[in-house]
Image (cartoon, rainbow, N blue to C red; front, top):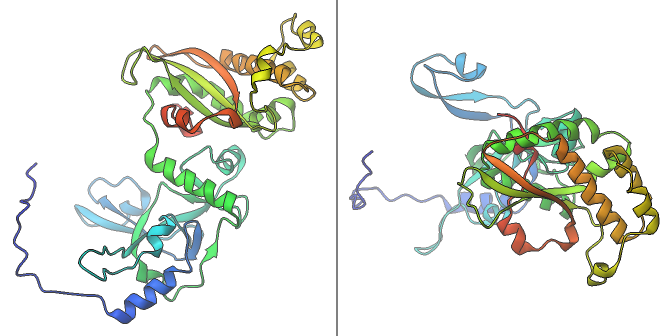
Length: 343
């Protein structure tokens, strides 16, 4: 592929500038919009090959070669996914050193149900960004995104906050960021995690000890063995379950000298199932007891996991999310439910 020359002659180009009155109106309108806001816009479009259509919408467009497929969002609403700081930037450059930001990105609002809805509401499925202020079933489908000029939003109904509070806004931003920057795990990870994904989907909605424990999982991280690289086959990893601090408190230095209770030690002298360990965590009091029970539980879960020649799991641990550092988070990629699905 030959790239264009970097010294293209632009002297003949006709100068053009946006009308100042339009710039003022657009920039003022953008002050009323943030990431996670929803606008009423019945427009969705993507580029498709008419000779090789992959969707029903493209197959009905007719024609040949590349063309724009236009469709209507199911619920006639679009969620703003552009970062708020970029929304607020002016749509036109005011000087030689200034940069124009005339575009904004939108994704269709959809409804989800069942186990997928529960996973997405917790931010575990980065295709769907939750919009809880609209209702628990509403999400932005990040798999479909269009870029429009900001002036498109002029004249529309007033944008609505789809998040509602700062916690929801942070979650929405986190899901959007992960959707665009997800780590490419080896295929073998899917074979290992798919059985657990199915189990978690089935058990999580239930009002049972195991269902409560699954809902206590904040994140799942992957620690690469320092003796291997991410591209090695087989890859050696440790799976780290980060548990909500309400269920597993932060590790303290004093905990090192704290042994599990005699009662728990006696109880663990016999083999215990996933249900047994999950139920025992409902009544465990000390941090030492809860730490031991959580680690036994995640190990029992992973006895249900699949196998792969590409990825070797050398260990499975549970840790309090309150004890997890930012430095580790940069080195240990997050394992979303999307990554657990079988290929």
